[in-house]
Length: 87
View 1 (cartoon, rainbow, N blue to C red):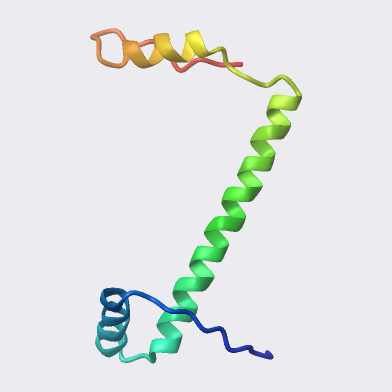
View 2: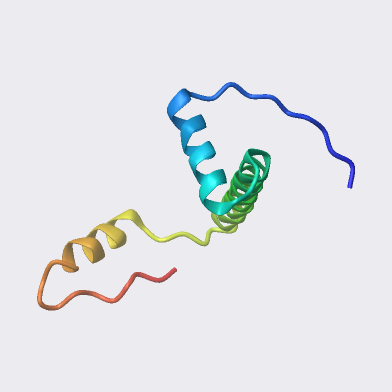
């Protein structure tokens, strides 16, 4: 796999944490940063996918009325909570 150097300035406390992790895990700082960056990118891609999915649901009218959600949320603190609202 080809690679590319990416440079970033990070706050000293974060850099020190990366160094500590690298020592504790017996890995390089580059490995720690690559793992963290890959996990963050995966998380952001999943968040984007879910956002697009949710917007498509809204476009198709698959929504729950705000009042129904509020009533359900209020009931959670009672002895007889309502079932979660459905479309």
